[in-house]
Amino acid sequence: MPTTTIQMQCHLPIPQPPAPHPLTSRHVAVIGAGAAGLVTAIELRREGHSVVVFERGDQVGGTWVYTPKIESDPIGFDPARSKIHSSLYKSLRTNLPRECMGFRCYPFVAKDDPDRDPRRYPGHQEVLWYLQDFTREFRIDELVRFETEVVRVRLVEEEEEKWKIKSKQRSGKDETEIFDAVVICNGHYTEPRVAQIAGINEWPGKQMHSHNYRVPEPFRDQVVVLIGSSASAVDISRDIAGVAKEVHVAARSVEDEKSGDQSGYDNMWLHPMIESVHKDGTVFFQDGSFVHADIILHCTGYKYHFPFLETNGIVNVDDNRVGPLYKHVFPPALAPCLSFVGLPWKVYPYL
Image (cartoon, rainbow, N blue to C red; front, top):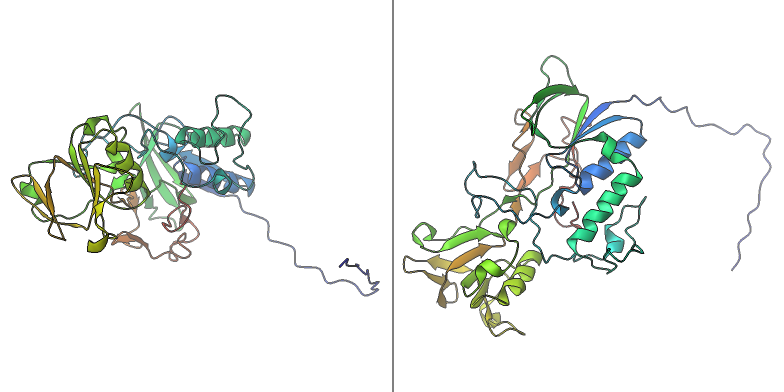
């Protein structure tokens, strides 16, 4: 039914809203030039702030920058290990349609270019290209200091609501600067979480975390026990089944009556969680079944990790929960001068 707008004449003065307070431009540090850091930077600049983005790598994209390199400790226990930021594996495609992944101001549409990936669920390279396109379109690269790692963020004792940031360039040069605010966008797909397994210190096989998985070839003719049931576990188990002798997937979501052969594969089985492992290489599951395995692959997620941040105990990570935070962004005692972007898990994970 059509609607009609009636304009009413009024001779009384119309009340006007109070004039907004003029914006005070702040000097803001953004840590990380992945998806979260890029969109944070553009919004801060749009509001008139002076922005510096610190990026440890040599390009934008964060976790979407694929590298075949893996860390020196494949399970991630050694704090002195050589660290790799990205957890991408070569075969990864998005499990979200591209329409859900684009920024409101720059939709993630297929490009009319034979070198690009037009699929609705594209490979990881297409996502990186999109972020690079976004960066060029809005000239965000002008704000980014590449190959510059933040090593310390702490409150300035002499001045309230000021932050002292120490950074280190790849060339070895250190620099300390003062900022009015800090936004942490360093992602949460880098520091591995590992399952606790009874007897693991005496088990003779190899362990690794999916953070260091890239291609299936190292698993050729191996008997693999894979722990996990989320997206990476599903992808990787299927990936390695093409070359491995056997793949045994152990997950909390598998009940005894649901264990057994994995449909569509003649060398993959589902099991409940691992009960224990032993010196002779056996891996026992909670239903009493067991296998002799060569490797345990942990697809068990990641930990929040802010080794550079010093807040005098105001912000903590407890049981992999960052807090206290308002709306998963602002610690009340330090807001708005400290904030986090991209922390939630139960969302479309893109950061």
